Image 1 (cartoon, rainbow, N blue to C red):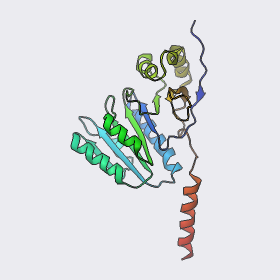
Image 2 (cartoon, rainbow, N blue to C red; image 1 turned 45 degrees about the vertical axis):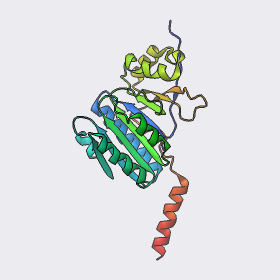
Image 3 (cartoon, rainbow, N blue to C red; image 1 turned 30 degrees about the vertical axis):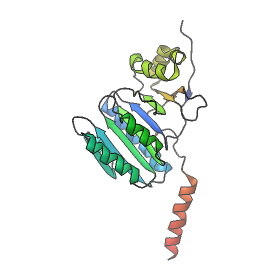
Image 4 (tube, helix red, strand yellow; image 1 turned 120 degrees about the vertical axis):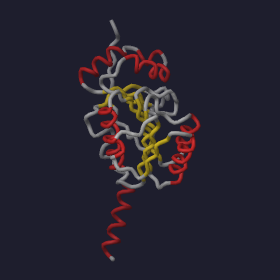
Length: 227
């Protein structure tokens, strides 16, 4: 009989973090990106820039193009990638970057390391399989995720103990229509932990507005109105 493992709900903010969504359908991808971007936009009071980088043999889908980006890059070769990274380096902060495509649509290790060092950059990855690169700090799976799509990524980060009871966990999450998250955000043990999240909600960290930034904006508005 498999051991029963109780998971807590994921509640960390994704701002200035590197998180990835494994989406098996376009609908799941759209839900992840729109909900997480909505929460991040609220947290930064809609300041800074939103950037899309899409890797693949075909252009990004219509729903992704229509989100409302400040810059969009269809990266088909090394030169396109260099252009995208240069823009991200020098654009206004805070910056929300969505890096999407087909399969394991992740930046090359050298680019990933560079993005990880940039202050004020939030990276949201989107693809159909879990990433291998260790720089990702959170990985989200949909409620219908299969064990073979989860096990390798979890075991690679947490070891054999991380997959204890995984089959029963996924079955329970599927029945509750919630998804699985591996995260090292805020964890003392960098192997991270497993959590659940509700994909129908607006996203984790909703309403956690940066009070200093909000105060600055209100001060600027007040000064403008006094003129």
